[in-house]
Amino acid sequence: MSETGNYGTRSGRGSSYNRRRRPFESTSDSHIDGDALAQLEREEPLSIAEELDKAAERVRRVGKAIERTDSPDPNMHIAALQKMSMPELIEVAETEGVEEAAGLKKQDLIFRILKQRVKLDGMMFGEGTLEILPDGFGFLRSPDYHYLSCPDDIYVSPSQIRRFGLHTGATVAGTIRPPKENERYFALLRIEAINGADPNLLSRKVYFDNLTPEHPDARISMETTPDEIAMRVVDMIVPIGFGQRGLIVSPPRAGKTILMQKMAKSVLVNYPGAYVVMLLIDERPEEVTDMEREVKGPNCEVISSTFDEPAARHIQVAEMVIEKAKRMVEYGRDVVVFLDSITRLARAWNSECPSSGKILSGGIDANAMQRPKRFFGSARKVQEGGSLTIIATALVDTGSRMDEVIFEEFKGTGNQEILLDRQLVDKRIWPAIDINRSGTRREEMLMDPEEHRRVCMLRRVLNEMSPTDAMDLLTTRLRKTKTNAEFLMSIKE
Image 1: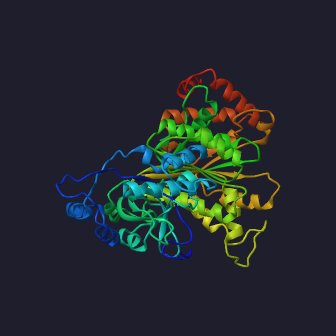
Image 2: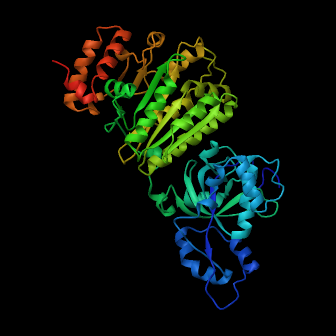
């Protein structure tokens, strides 16, 4: 089958697990009628409501019932296979009788195992994040492989996309079938859930661009434990709210990645209901591994495109992340995206965008900054409920004129800035935050009036000192107290 056939050139992967089945209690033979099953597969995909209406008749015609369950066997879930090492997968393949398992890549081996299981157990259930391709069809991708195309992708037909009004980034779940002859991918038969809800509810949701943006007024508390001084400083000096659009301006090797890592962990600890996405663009592979080990949880994703990937890959993964975040906000979720870094993402867009013939200072095309600004500008708190928070790093003092121009383009577009100072790094003072130049717009909306008054008093005192002396004094005093509230109340007027 050609690459441009009904299953497309690119693919997304979705997680799949077998549906348990119980023999239909009847005195007749339980043999499955092959012609009836083939006719069932050719039918137009149905919503879950329509499927329930015809379920009983189909059970009698096919001869077996598919037991609906909210707790499927974890051993049959594709996520369990993805977490296995290659030796474990090879052992599973040998146990289940998968032929020619040696020499296959991990994704190909998982595909073979899934295909073998579906032959034995019938229908399966799949879930993933939808990416719609220019040809009209789409694929369900998974964050486990950073939305890369894999052999165990799940194909979504154009008719299903049109029928339910799906957009890129929607999390889709439903019944799937294995590939037929000359087909390459698993295919979605029926959509049972969109973003964890009834598919028929999607038509009632307001599209993200039509939601009403507001100033952030619900605070994200970064303070966790008394010894986490960096987060206590951030929480006091540059408060963050749900819907914030923040920049961490940093020279190289100033601790920006570690600072973002601690911020992400604080959000996961203090707000289990929030969804955290750590997006690493053009980063080193070892940094990605470290981030995956440190930042983890049921409501957390670490998505990356390392420096050895092409610029088109950087753009694709960033688009998938922001579109998924938008779909979640439409359903009233609070999403927090940490991007490291927006400078490298803008570089990727500059190299891939069509040339306009106008080159700005530093070699940036005149149209190159449009899509990075649209990405960064997506951060907002919406009146209808939900919020999208983006905290991104911007590189300065790299010796590149392009990086300086990119920073100048984003300067002033955010409503919060955290500036890291090289002088503090040289003296090994952490966090290396320049207190006097860092701040949040409309911070009074995020703070208690008494807290805001005392923070202003503190800033007036620290403003008379150099950045190194100010941070040294602040961290020393914070270590003597257990909470920020205790520290602020100890300030003498």
